[in-house]
Length: 113
Image (cartoon, helix red, strand yellow):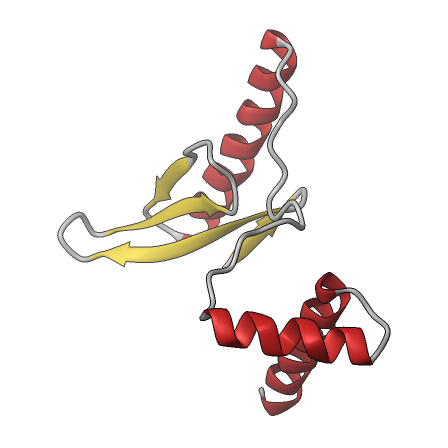
């Protein structure tokens, strides 16, 4: 994964075309790029982001930011109830409970890797 100006790109290799292919993730706008070397791929990624930001400025559009901090999760009704009741018992919002649970799991993954 590559990062530039707060944007991230998923990278793959196309054996058919003999090039690296990248796509910016975490935004609705589609930004794709490619390069025949890692250095060229990096340059094209930077150019793609810079062009996107320039285009947004020209047309007066607010550039999308990845991962706005709000998402919808579908879970079984009983799990929703259990989580809400647990959060209530701990005197916290359901949102705070879910945030804490996600942080806990992400920290475990970070420690394991």
